[in-house]
Image (cartoon, rainbow, N blue to C red):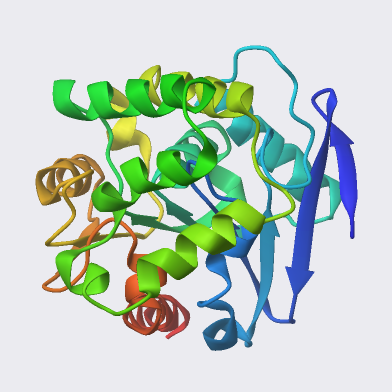
Length: 265
């Protein structure tokens, strides 16, 4: 599988399909496989996925990370594979990276889709993310997932027999688990980023998507984000929490494809 050497690391990426380039950037605790349930719907695009530094099969240097640094990784990846301009879809921390990418390289981004996102967090969110960065060194992975998942998935999802147990089992047996130091560095990168005062400089077509039941990055975060980006659209899904890509992949795919289709008319 392909890797490129950029910014002092080996960055893993995956490209599937042909058509207009579409870049998918995953969030905290996730690598490129987090988008798997969306992939069948995106066959008419050249879909580019990556493992952020520290995740999956990318290098995991043991030094502080920043969202802007990870956005630079993405920009250099696009240069390396010869992509001049791309639609960008980011989830959670990946949406932070997407914001910094378009702010630093506006000519590279055709459009922006931000899922379960924010520009500036609040004290409760910061406390959760700080804990998620500190906890892996003190508990095993199974207990860690049991702590994290209630913030990600809805009551309805939890009520599906065996669903959460299956996801935990998958995480425990996944061969490319992040290290405790990576989760710490990612958590601090999240906490150190704020785009509030710079949103006005994002001028590409932008869609913001959030689940009404998202208790980690609540609707108010997305509303503030959409209000700050000129002419941004926002969709609040009546069903779904932070883990929309797992709970509602077909709904997310439909919104994404409709948004992109309008841009080509």
